[in-house]
Image (cartoon, rainbow, N blue to C red):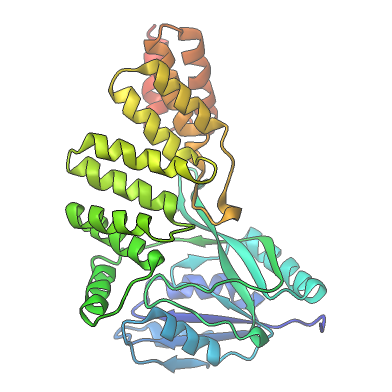
Length: 356
């Protein structure tokens, strides 16, 4: 491939005047073309975008995110298509990685580049929640977005993984928008596949419709649900817990152990069940098991890093204190303190151990 690989940034936006400049300013100098598909802004979004590109197009919104993204891709001319959301940011460190990635594109000629997406941070800016997404796609491979909501592209061909990371800095939530779209599509006779059945159940849970959410999530788990299986178990646990159905909640967590290696956040929740029963020995076993889990984001899983380190350290400190092993309790407190010294739990325990 020509060493002068060109990247087209393709975005869909609506009423993003508060964040769009931040996004485009962070990445504009490292891409060769910017495509904006505006789905109906009534604020200054398009005006701001035109400070960065003259390729701003109107797209009539049809409650279909994939259709909007495919439209933005259709306007691009670069060798690779890269997508961002308006509230995404590329840090200065990752600008350097993106420049290096351009060289890799020329050398390896991939069809898809999988990159980490970080969507939550602690008080020190350390990533808490991350997963890999199909971030750059070869234009001539003719990839298409699928899914009217929670849209995605199924990777195929020559797939590589990159250290380049995008930070999602959400300024506002979607409210019940996603739920309304699901309900509208269902009323129109749209049949949900396993993935969207999970996401529909998740939206019901977010909107505190726990009984309905549990029923939908149970259905999703009975379907051929792959990457989202563990998440479905977690949200099913949340639904049953909110309905005070403790046994069903616990069994929901156990279902996640039926397939594949365990995930740390689920093991911590299992541990929490035993801790609530004051069975500190069993709780400590599960918290300790969580510290031995790896980052499974490259397997398509969501990764909540703090559940492998900080959270089990705090909880193990508590468990061992109640088990009468103050030496171990203090050791795990110090481990937690080394990671997040200003966290309220750490500050409380610091005062507690200081008074012993």
